[in-house]
Image (cartoon, rainbow, N blue to C red; front, top):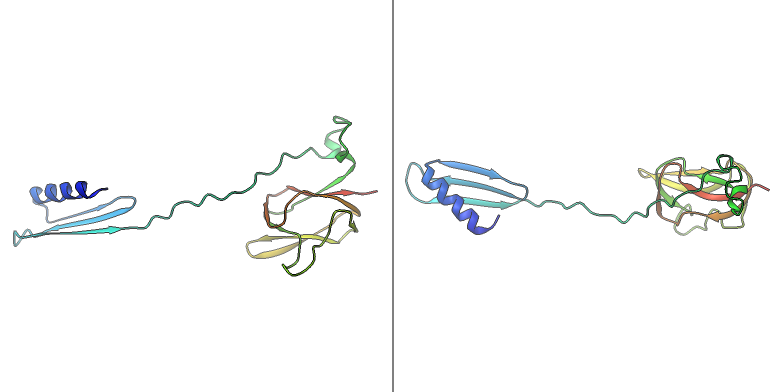
Length: 162
């Protein structure tokens, strides 16, 4: 609302004979009081209300995932990923490869893992959840960047069980 519109509103209220008018819009709150008793000045209060704009966060979209090996029996014979086991995120949160910034990563490509080994942590609501391996094998590929948001059931690692 610009100053010209506010001035026109004041004139309109003064002519109407109303003693007080309050107008609230998205980002403006106006109260106009006219001195009905003393027929003198009119007082105008204009208050800007800060409106927080939605913050657009650049969240990388989950990469299209290939179906799990049992669901795709020889549909893509050229794909080497079919022999690997996919470790997926059990929760929504932020993926971290290290227990803390000054510590080494849990696993690297080529690391041999066993059942129960911690692969990463996922932070959800200020709680750091250790994600343990349910299979033994060798890490072939890490599918998520450190400090990235992850969705439920999003692939995190490819493990070669042989």
